[in-house]
Image 1 (cartoon, rainbow, N blue to C red):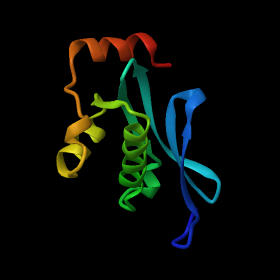
Image 2 (image 1 turned 30 degrees about the vertical axis):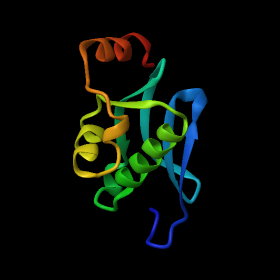
Image 3 (image 1 turned 90 degrees about the horizontal axis):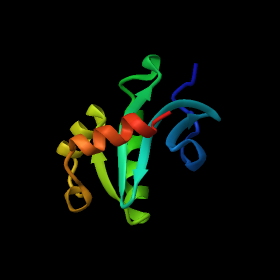
Length: 112
């Protein structure tokens, strides 16, 4: 099990449409999305349960949303974790779009 001196890295796996957080080279969490034109629709986030409480999901989402901004896309937080996260962290309102039935349908059609 990873300890307190772990090497934590967040990466963007564009081929699988997800961001991953790794500790010592092992994937321990991911945030999955679907791109739809100018929107990046985040639909699922998870971190290994045994690592909960370490702030890994927050680190993962901050990286993912900052990268989404840098890519010129807008955020649609279908994922409940991402929705809660953006409601408590300043600085993303300018690129935040509401969850709509169309966004949910897009995820259902295209998420793997």
